[in-house]
Length: 294
Length: 148
Image (cartoon, rainbow over all chains, first blue to last red; front, side, top):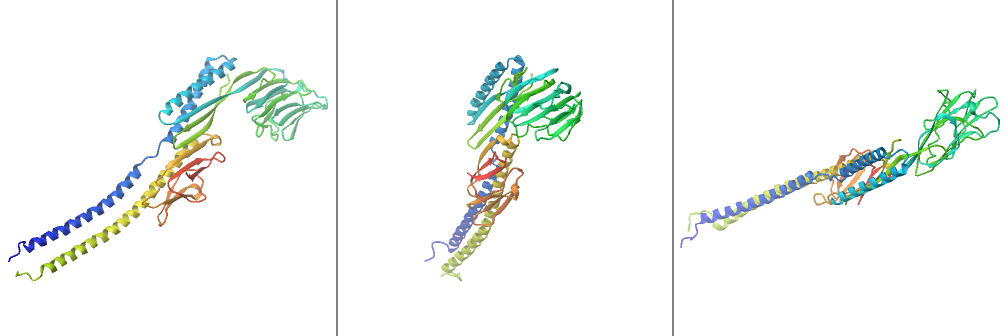
C-alpha cells in the first residue's frame, strides 16, 4: 500500500520545526541583550536628587530675608529704641520661620529657623574730654577699639597705676614718667617709649597700631590683643591718671552691659540657626548676619 | 518500495543532527556574546554608580562651601544599587579623596571615577555598595563617605 503521507512533506515539516526552534532561541538571546542595554540606559538617565540644591536655595533665601527684615526694622524704629527694635526683629523672623516651616512641610521637608538678636554697644566720644572708666562685660566680638589720648594729660608721677585697655586677660598699658616719657606696654610685656609727653597717642586695638601725632610708630608692639581673648571682658581703666582724649569702642555680645559711659545700643548681629531636613538629607548651619550701626 | 536511496529513519536522524549542530552553534555564540555584554554592563553600571556618587559628593561640598563649616552639619543619604550585574561591589575613596574606586566582588571588574571635591577624605576601608551616607564633619570640615 502506498504511504498516505508523502515523505517529502514530512521532511519539510521537520525543517520548519528546526527553523522555528532556531528563531525562538535567537529571539531569546536578543531579548537578553536588549534587557541589559535598557537597564543600563535607565540607570544612566536617573538624575541626582535636588535636595542639596534646595537646601542651598533655602539658606540663601533665609539669609536675604533676615537681612532685609533687620534693615527694614532699623529704618522704622528710632535709634534709641533698641528694645523695640529687638522685639520687632524677633517677631518678624519668627513669622518668617513659620512661613517656611508650613510651606516646606507640604513638600515633605522640615525646616526650622531660630534667630537670636546679639546686642551691641557703641560708646564713642568724639570731643576731647576726660576718658573715664568703662566696663562692657562679656564681649563676643569687637568691631572698633580705638583710644586717642592727649599725652600731656597723663600723670608723670612715679609709681602710678597706668591707663589700661583690657580684653579678657590681656591688657595694653600707657604710663607716663617723671622724665617726661610715655611707655606703652603690649599684652606680651613688650615696651616702647615715647620721648615726650606733649603728643597725641592713638592706639587701635583692632588693627594693632600705635600712632604718635598721626605717625605710626613702635611696629614691634603687638597691640591687637583680641585673638584668643574673645569672648572676654572689655574695659578701660584710667588708673591714677586723668587722661583726656577721644575714643571709639563698638562691641557686641549676648552678655554685654552698660559700660558706665555714654553709649548707644544697637543690633550688633543676628545669629540664625537653620535646619533643613528631608528623608535623605540633614543640613544644619548657623548664619551670622551683621547689623548696621544706626 | 520507493525509489529513495535513504530510509526515512536515517533521513530523520540526519535532520536532527543538523538541527542539533545549528542550535549548539547558536548557543555557543550567544553565550560568549552574553558574557561580554554582561561584562560591559557591569562596568557601565559601576561607572554610572561612581559618577552618581561623585555628583552627590560635589553637591554636598558645594553646600558646605556656601556656609561656615565650623558650625555646619550635613548628612546626606544616597541610595546606590545594592548589586551591579547580579554581583555585590565595594566603594573606596583613594588618591587623597580625588578618586572613587568601585570594584565588583568576586571578579576583577574595577572602575575609577574622578571626583572634584577638595574636602573629601579617603576611606580607611572599602565600604559595601548600596545605601551610603555622605557626612560633613564639623571638626575639620572634611567630607566622609560611610556605609549607611
